[in-house]
Length: 401
Ligand SMILES: Cc1cc2nc3c(=O)[nH]c(=O)nc-3n(C[C@H](O)[C@H](O)[C@H](O)COP(=O)(O)OP(=O)(O)OC[C@H]3O[C@@H](n4cnc5c(N)ncnc54)[C@H](O)[C@@H]3O)c2cc1C
Image (cartoon, rainbow, N blue to C red; front, side, top):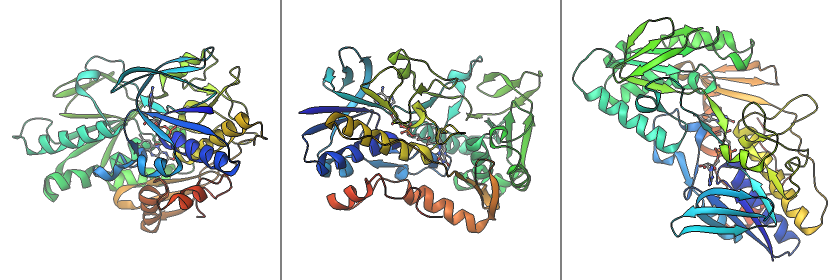
């Protein structure tokens, strides 16, 4: 029996497993597929800026079990590409999983800012646990006795996530207190570059700036944090801002397990893969999602996004299974690129193409964003046949917009 091990139960890992299972099924092949995941859930990370709910993660077993995929809950600690094995620390202690093919889909994680106080006093919305802690903190701080900085909320990083959180922030404050408190709160967005959304380019910026103004978000541009304390932040300029809440959204890097492959990594710590998503220099390993540096076409590299992680996962699963079975592989390609950015009460912005040309803006787009976040990126539901159909490499993703 062939062994396929997939590290990571996120978007890329889940879809790699489903597509590999579909191919094994189509070719009546005996392939044991094991997904190693930290817990039994897919965390729907794109939702973590929203008002917190348990629905921001979806159980993996209802979608894996019907296809006979095994879920091993634990942390992959050691990769041995020579012995072709993965060591996993889980509830049963350490176990070694041998593999014939590996799909590395361990995703990305936000590293703490390297400044005093960051580890102790900053929050994040990078993981389900992080988002839950942030929500708990919000509730506690808003119910605590008045003190300087209690109603000041500092968000670090004006990238995609920071903008979405900043424009949603007053809504979240209102839900844990009341409309007056939400209106009076200071929401501050700190960005080290001189513009908001530096990586999003110039085209969407006017919409973003207008939405931040409408949401009464104060922007500190060209600014860096130097220190975080329990009740204040200090900027590199020396300015001190009293606050009990600092959420960091900047500093995303590929998961450090990528380093264990001992191959070239890009600036974000991602492993370089060929068009088949095979790791350069490691013939038995494929990589997909935030941990892989893959070309989507001749001119662009995949971003750390679900939009790329899902199709990449499917290609990696397909190719890993085909490689095991001696069948032809298919090159990953994804020339179309869109964004759908939530802008709080202003609605949302839909852009088309790599230059992010705005196509639609406002409340109509907000319902599209809701559909993406609450339906399209969730695992497939239904019986085995429905899951196998969704796992077809040629099934459209994203659904037509
Ligand atoms: C707040 C926020 C908003 C976002 N908004 C958007 C958006 O609007 N649109 C969009 O397209 N993308 C968005 N993204 C990005 C998107 O969530 C990621 O690109 C996507 O989750 C990547 O999928 P992945 O499977 O590669 O990694 P992940 O989803 O990170 O999954 C990797 C999984 O592997 C697990 N893992 C890591 N190491 C190990 C190990 N050693 N052993 C076992 N398991 C391990 C992790 O715990 C995780 O569950 C957002 C992200 C965040 C945080």
